[in-house]
Structure formats: C-alpha cells, structure tokens
Length: 287
Image 1 (cartoon, rainbow, N blue to C red):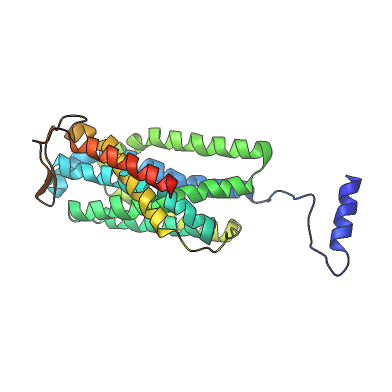
Image 2 (spheres, rainbow, N blue to C red):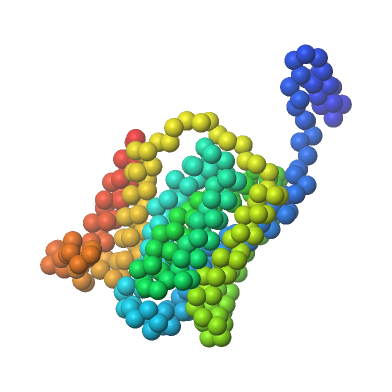
C-alpha cells in the first residue's frame, strides 16, 4: 500500500500529472443504480406475461382472431431478438446510459400506443415493433451499466438480484394481468409501463453516471444487417414451427394475403428459415 501511495504521488505531481486514483473507490450510488435498472427490466419481463392472460378479452374487444393476435407476442420476440445485438453495439459506441434512456422512452411510447389501440394492427405496431425495439436497446444497456458499476463480489450480487427480479416478474405477470383485466381493463397492462418508463428515465438521467463512449468508429451496417436478419429468421423458425410445421408443412405461409410458401412444398417454411439463418450466421462470423 505504501508503494501505491508513492506511485500516486509520483504520477500526480509535476507538469505531466495524469491524475490516476489507485484506490478506485466504488460508486456510492451503485445500489440506487441497481434499483433503477431493476425497475426497467421488470417492465420488459412483466409486459408479455401480463398480455397472455388478457388475450380472450382482447379478442372480443378488438374483434380479431387468435392467429392475428399471436403476432403481437411473436412480433415482439422477433423485434427484440433482431435488434438485441445491434442495441448492445450502439451502447458501446454512443454510451449505455444514453441507449438506456432511449430504450425506456421507446418502450413507454409503444405501451402508450398499445394502450389506446383501436385495432389489432395498432396494437401490433405499439407492442411488437415500438416496444420490442425499446427493449432491444434497454436490456443490453442495463447489463453493461451493471457490469461497469459493480466490482468483485458486489457485481455477482447485483447480477443475481437482476436475474431473480426477471424470474419473479415473469411469474407475477399473469397474476397482475388477471387482476387488471378482471377489475379494470386489459389496457392497464400497458398503462403501467407508461407510468413507470418516465420514472426510470428520470432516475437514469439524475442518478446513473454518464457512460463513457467507445471509439467513434462508423457503425458496421453490413455486419448489423447480417446479424439482425439471421436472428430474425432463427427466432421465427423456433417460434413458428408449431404453426407451420417443423419438417413437413402444416399450412401455407402468407404475407398480406399473398402466399409466400405454400403447404404443397416438401418442407415447411420453418426449415427454410432455420437453414437461411444458419448460413447468415456463418457469413457474419466470416465477415
């Protein structure tokens, strides 16, 4: 320790001082930061599990069908998986706190759109697209902020609390969704996020230290396109194999009324999506 004090004195005295702090004290606001991050990831974890319970009520109110409404949940998973790695990279370049705030803002905006949706199309746009994109920015940024805020055993504790909170939120979501749908409206499943997202944003701006930016290199658009498209196809293949068949086609795959992959083909569209995803992942790694 005496050598450390001497090193600090030598490096900080004189005209070439660099101001290195050998002790590197932990951030005194680290546990408040953890609580803000937990409140944000709870929104992501609760969101879909709350919605599952409200599906029968939404079907009746929006006069839609089960396959159409399934795209609210499936579309959310597809958007989240597609932009998750890209969202982490954007945080590396532009700062994780900034991406956390933007992600929380998008998540709150998507929840607002979904909460006032007059049709299933608007609901899909708000939940599956806007919320999914917000979650893809928010989730990796929260992990990066945790990793940079905590050290040693405290880091393990923080990640354990973060993971346990997600598990508890997923388990609690159906109970909350049932209560809100029965006593109020399924729209309150989204309005909770509209209330909580601004609180998380204000807490992040006021209490979470600004994240250092990485090297300001240009975004690798070809690499981003490769990994995003491969993740989209992979999640589509895994989530829709029950709908379209894993090996042999169960039904035709259509988009906007146009049959893209008929059921008369020898293999289902899930197999094709999985194989194309595998090829794109290999191309991405080589690139």
